[in-house]
Length: 464
Image 1: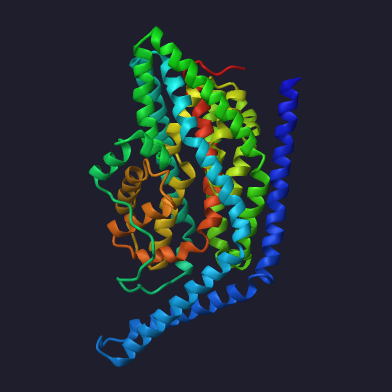
Image 2 (image 1 turned 120 degrees about the horizontal axis):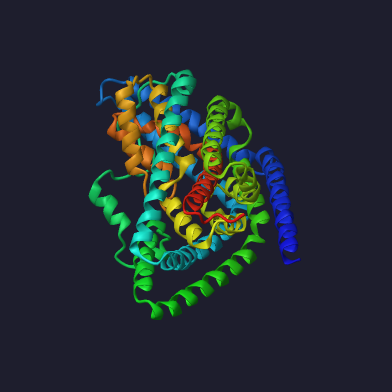
């Protein structure tokens, strides 16, 4: 009876989220054409003028010319006006974005303690380092294979579609600022990012990979002390169940959050940006669809027809991740649905948190797709060997940056610099990135769910 009630409640929540999505798009469209119409128009005019001035500046060869100083002053004034208008627009749309922000803050409040408690319990129940190593090895094998396939698919599709060739842009000035910090490529920075100095700092900053590392040590230590560790395992298990209960309360706000997020983004972007970049957006989403098919086909090799049941189970987390542009927002619900699907708790609590640092398949595909799109836009031809080098660089630099804001753009910025592609090209993506992030986030949920189900099957820990 309780199972039926939970199922009906889940169906209702999915319906409410979809209603919130549709209403958000409708309200956002109305606001775009009326409520923030003037601000949007002013921003568009300022951007057009800035682009014209930048072209004029580039054409001036004499760097001491008075006209150059005048144009730069005019550009600076226009940028200032544009930023002020952006602030005014954000202020007007604040009530809508606030709803989504509060929901995401509540989810982030849950994620760190949930990852810690479930992973400690999962690792402690595995029993010893041998079991942890075996399951960890299988998990990482799947993750790196999926990441490589996602990156390769993005590379193949962008070469096939060539969406950037239609842009035909002139090379920008070397000092053009995109406002996005580049990701460091050094091994030292990567290792410092992996190993925490304080677990409390890691939890405060929601550094999932660092929490995972501490949880692995803590879980193995708990298992090693034998009977005394049972008290810790029971306590952690109880805390995890309390947090999952809290998750249920927070999830009731999901339809409102989806409504607010969609209303704000459509009000800012409008449907016009869809037509401007329609080819790129359509080709990228077609690429994500192909990636879904590849992931599901690979999963079906191991779990057979149950792959359809899995997709049915995780449809709500997928919609939530898509609507909020955050796979993190879907983490608690994904964890619950995978356990209901039949994956044992000890596997789910081990694989899923690792997936959020090592297995963001949608983001992986976007990185090669977007990097090569920018190169194409400037007419830069990269041979296959260089593209494969880029793929391998992205494979390494993308690991463990799930907690970084706009992580994909940050990694792409670092990669462009490495391969002498103008970083200013990121400006081509800034306007549509929120729309693309929705598809990436949903794909990340699918990839991690399939990975968890497959590892469960490998470990004979998938119940019917």
